[in-house]
Length: 581
Image 1 (cartoon, rainbow, N blue to C red):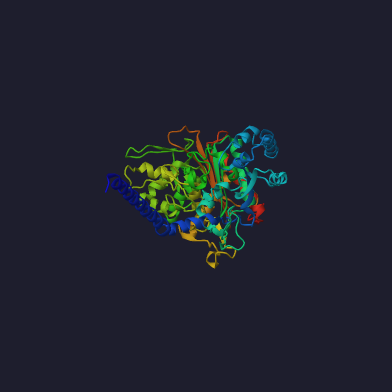
Image 2: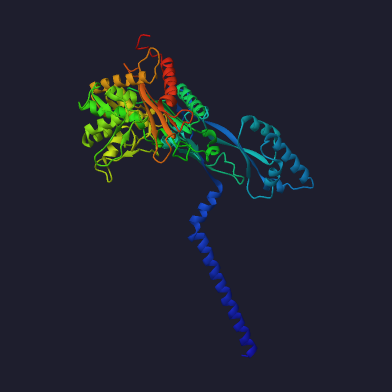
């Protein structure tokens, strides 16, 4: 065999083996795609023709005690443009067409500049949102224009029809989630359960009439009814704002409780915010000591309650039969201690001489309250501070400042702590804690749990498990009925002495003027706490003003607002007088 023939056969064999190798590789790849990857490819192919869509659940509504809407939902359109579609229609008339569409959009959406719209019409691969939550009139005008590169997408938005009314109670909703207040605490109930829609689609994404489809309905969120009265809430908010502005104060808080049940009728703070535009208030400061205006100051902003604490010191001593209203002391205007504890002085440095326990409250005498605390001693004083709920969370909302105080078991405690706590210094509490403690006095010595959720309505969607009304909850007996009645009489005399009265109605109150260590004496927390009618208490009211400048004392700064709110309550609820005029 010639050399040429052998070479030819060798080339043929190489070509044959190369061909066989190629066939083996091809068969292997076919097996890989057709058999090994068939499942995943099938699922991928199906996904091209299957549309899965989440159906958002309408958020539950929030009502006040009279059925007025506090929070609801509205459907508003977002506006999108499709630059890629516009570019695909590129013609010699493109500049004119672009200018015409930009001008038309700007006429309907004046807040969006023509320059911004031209920029958004750049050659982007995605639709661009140019406006959100436009009003229904604007939506209709855009539909009438039939702009080829503009479309509307409806969105459900949380809205608060009363603006800032009760905003620090309600909170707000961001990206479908409740933030702060009621919206946050009951977010799971309010949010409902999302549904879903699955359908076969054509190449353009349109559902096929004869294709397979399935739908699971969204379950609407539960509706909540609160205990607050919108009328009283509005009156309290506006009156508080007026008082703060007139007195040149920094901030303030007002609480109105049902004296028998603990239900919150109104709870307001200032400064406040509008939950419809919560982003505009991100840099707004709240109450003194808080950098966040969204927090509820009734729970979050603790303070030294000052002389409003003297009522609880008297309650502890009366309940343990250490004093009577007529027990007297000699008040030289100061009280010294043998252990070197700083001397206690009366707030005005005055000496009252011989005075009864009722007069101690009338004069708001620090020396008298401190003396009573020394008679009690820590073993008989602190259990009552604990009973009245100081240093204990209320659990209404989070976050919450529960305040606190040192006891004789605390490191660094001295008799100075005991005596100062007796008149409201060296102890901190939230405004709602103080209001709750006065509610116990008003309610014959029985403390109720403050609450703001009145009922939950499932609207027939979530089953009967969610249909219930909140029942008033007794926490504990704090003092005896006899002590409550005796102390109430002393507080009535205090109200009359301070000229915080309402013709025809008996009122039991105590004023408070607290100063903060490290600040000047004119930087006070001016407050008044009490209840009316004293003979049959219906409402507990607490007013606290932070750093008032025109007048700095509890009686003169917070007293007029307390009386104004009391007058509105008796008129609004038709409470009959309990005294002859």
